[in-house]
Length: 166
Image 1: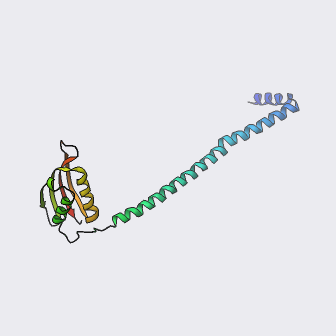
Image 2: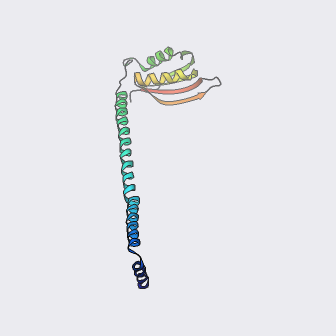
């Protein structure tokens, strides 16, 4: 090791002053470039990436807060009509209003606030509309649902159990 150090000192001593200044200047530039490339630039890019990530997360948070308010508003809606009407008569009324009367095969009470009914070859879109109205406007929830496609497009057979309240 001492041999190499002695050879380096001899080589350095044989250089002219101008050559030594060029080597020292180049070494300083090289060290500055290495520090910039390995420390400063990654640090600056990392901070910028984190700042843009925070901005995106803040936008997501604002959207979620607005959605939360909307969800709470929807969850807080109470049944608007049919509160005193029996579940059986309410269901008959809504089935008739949506044009599903001819498809309604049977409707039987299954407890004080629960009804089972069968639809054969009923319009699928109207059936979905019925379910939406019952839940959103009257507080009636589907407990059990079995839907089978028929050979006719848009018509289904359905076995449904609904309950009012909990």
